[in-house]
Figure (cartoon, rainbow, N blue to C red):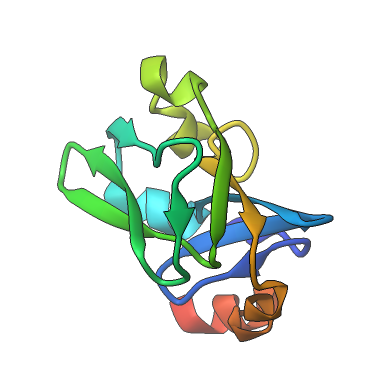
Length: 125
């Protein structure tokens, strides 16, 4: 399992990469492997205000549809438009080209509640 060291992780298998006051969010390599072939991604709308832990997106695979939860609170500033025509990017590049959305953090202290790479590695065992 690929668990990049520069990311923070949510209990619900989302990751966030923070740069300044903006975070890029996606699902983990473990999550995409569990879902198998992703066929559709519904991202939140730009301008949407999200709450930490709130459902904000949907990823559909050949097996099931899964809610995606925002790891932090804030406003969506950008979505990954490439996923509309190529949702499999979440499978092939979950931590790079397969990101879901970017969010301007409204409460950066919420990052403290997320897991380190070591803690996430332990969670998925």
